Image (cartoon, rainbow, N blue to C red):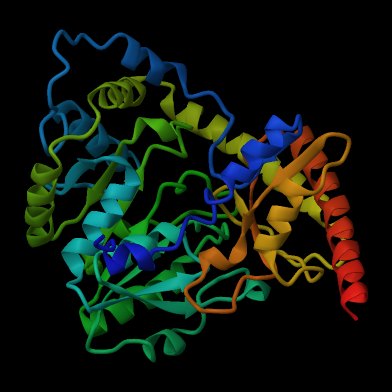
Length: 408
């Protein structure tokens, strides 16, 4: 029997989803699982969006136009204009979520064997799709002690080789919640222009910035031909299942390539585009987004304060998004810890699932004492989840000590 392709064998399972079967087994045993492993908010999707889906006047559910429904594109142009970014016709195309947008960006900027610089820890799907397309991810090391901000620009410059084609990052960041300052982004812009690199900025959390302003890559006019924006409605609208995103560039060659790729993949979801148009036409849409941001802001503060009760915990308060990356010195294998929490531990019939940290790194050996926690649940649930985590850490350490003593 013929083996599957080497590239699919090289892709690791998602650290966010790979252990979900263990959570399902825990639930079958009657254990309540607090899911802090995945960026799926519990906040209701705005009514205007859902009404737009319900009220769509569609007799035949046909393919939508490959670039996106014209009303969707127009509404998104207006959305960016409201944030001070003017786009020309042809600068934006609708994609199947932000995921397809960054896959398009990878495929357009890099050929097989070429390199892309990505600050680590990073969203694991960046690496997965890079591997599938034969692209090498070169990690930019960032540190929890620095809040995962970029290192000095000369350190990044040393990573540039003749094979480097682009720099990719999310801002605010997944999984760390880092919000890059305008000054550090300016350093990236200057570096990109020096070496003629593309800058791919993944910005689905842009409105979920709690400390300062989330600077979009489109706010640097000098980068016009080298900037590619990846965006999605999943997070700011709590509409992950809608699968609507977009890719934006002022580079006409880039967008000509995007047009080819949209034709190959046929079309983006029709009903969800109607929902987005209805939402963006609602005069209160900005207030809706602000209300969602306010909830996440409170959750961030609640979770951060609760985590400080765990002995030895190391984390920095994230500036945006809805994740916090945490180092627990008590553990040396965060995946084994997650498995322990799902297989062997509960506190009064409850346990917690977080995402093990190693899967967010390209560098071997990193992240084994770290986890990503998504603050996507209501504040009382977050407080309870930290109580369970604290007890689980103590039990995990005790179990390891017992095993070591027996082995000795």
